[in-house]
Image (tube, rainbow, N blue to C red):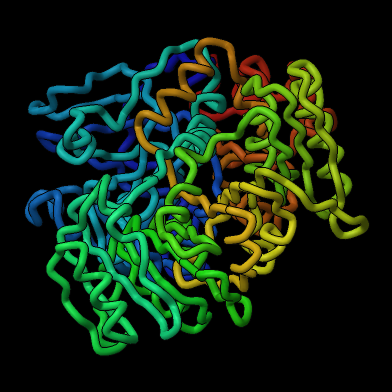
Length: 571
């Protein structure tokens, strides 16, 4: 395949593939069998696939990764058993969830897909739950770091919308530009995700009140939405009467140990005890929200906040220094979008995802926006300024870069985006926050990771933790439209290229944060090692000549496939 045009060739019996076979162990399998599609199945030839930091998490966790476990519902067991690429538990898997490819074969009962289509692949199967997450391409279903991948049409049609997970794309963009839509879509999703700004109607509510705190304002809270169930843990009869005055049937709890784990959509806590807050957060359901009503008192110490659940379970934190829970809900933004006039700080800005956040914000057209790119590596900060600086200046955005290891970063940000999965940096983000600061925890902390947070400052300044994982079909289509319309060149985030022989080095570079951008794997060049774009002058001068000011291009991709050889190169 070259330049978005597939060179016809017979489908071989075996293929090259990268497989994770155990925790910490990958192999380059040169003779993996190419599966033949069953009646409902689709075979896709991979054009390109990006490397993601999440691939390193799967590598180290393997069977311990929540997306490597068995699918619990959404497809019958007999259907799952008939999909050769379904590899839960200890079965070897092929990583890679940033792919683009061509459909080369379909079964006779496939209705929505056809041979010859070029497709961007949405890889997050939220309709197929596992015990602690959901199924995903590149995890418990084999991913894109192989020459051919098998999919089943019954698993790649989104319930409720009837949308395809294989999104058709035209021949014009380079394979790298299309493959990079996936990480850019994850960035997009983190800004456009709609936040819940009130009590969940028909949900489960837990109200907890400490001694000395009045229970007030629940009637007002219930005006826009009423829970189906209300559980109360209170200290005195007056607090209980205030809850019963709402007219809802109240179930009493004797103590926190008797409160069901992770089951509440909303928790309203009238109090300020750090230990209580730490226990209460574990009682939140998926997408649950805790509202801390301190009533003018102070929390006695920093609180260990589960920032992994903010990212993966979409749990949310709000609060008020006053006495009315409605004030906490009123502080919740509609979404995670940047606003005109924001002073934005991106922590870890010089890495691959940080660059995307900076470019997205700088390109959005917000007036009076300033962005501080914060990192600890001067060379990568220089790369960030070279890549994003011209875009910022064109849009009238003030972009500065700062090395937080060698200099001070002034507080007062109204938006902070965090790329680095270091718990201490979450606490630092709150320290740097100004009034009304949105703190986008983009770094993929594992569930259960706790960060020490000054919640007094967080609540007083009306801060709000945001966090999303992955992207949806709509997010990918939104970014793809920008790519195909010429509004966005996702190749701005590309730092290096390789074939399968370079994947081990690529994973090490991603994990060690030595790459200034994304790394793209070309399956048709299995023996190509890791090559940074800055090295092309020496190794592949004709490819280097096709770069645009150091940026990867479609012409450079075509030339690499030509000179580096492989089945996809032209005659």
